[in-house]
Length: 364
Image (cartoon, rainbow, N blue to C red; front, side):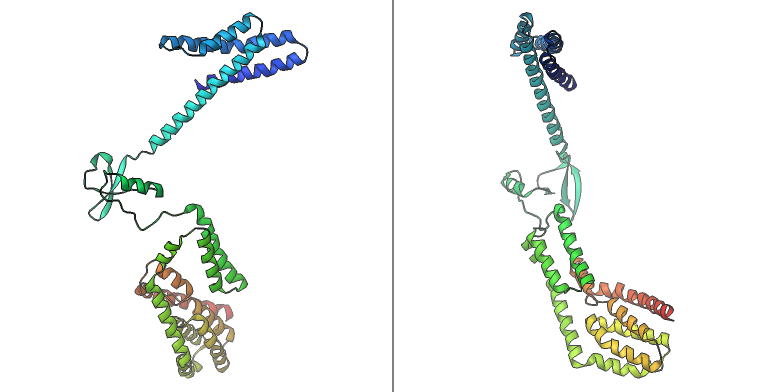
């Protein structure tokens, strides 16, 4: 067995090292006895192997090794016998190691042989045993780039096409995640321009091959770009035409006689409503001085209204352009415009009411 051959090698090698130590210490008699003790097990194992080989009708070079060790012992050349024993046991160990490694590799290879195949049928995928595959079946095969050419050259396969999607590069996932985290943290903590950080992050992801250039181009959704450009133009038009200021000036007399809590809710609602069509930065800049002015007229705490404007300009979920993160997930998750309205509008109401009562309780 492999363990026996390992023990035989260790015994012969250890005996040779110990014998050399005794020989150098001036005790050759003890060295000769240890040499003989180390050679005998290797010689016995060799004789057994020779007998087995003869029984199988095979004759190899093991006989030469056995005759060498035997002759060396008979003529008192114990060192030569020990060296031959180490060579023989080392050879058998290496042979057993190579056989064991080949056996493990073969088992691993056989374990990877598929037992089932993925077949496309009736608009879906199903896993079936290989015995059920019939001519004309359409199969889904997971293959590397090098295997695609071999599959296309296989005459047993009718048509081989590649799926448009590609496997995830999990080894490069930490780079992509770290880049995204760095962009967000640097923009949040150091007020660096997120547009420039996003461009640098995109370049880093492409440079490190987390994403191929053709994949990046194919991921650009034209509908999303049209929506973003259209809503940005719409927001700029409202701002330049003075529509936002007109809305605020019209509602200012109504807010002047309202209670502090009602004024707080109204300011938050107006901010959230305008943010859904105009950039949150522009709305915050316009409504902040109005909120401070209304606070002076009504006697309300200006801090409450300013905080309401800040949160109302940020917590906008009803449209894809209500906030930057809405736009990020709009194209990536294949959402529709009405998906934001259905889910985001109730969220606006719930978050707005909770925020207004929390602000009133905190500053009240």
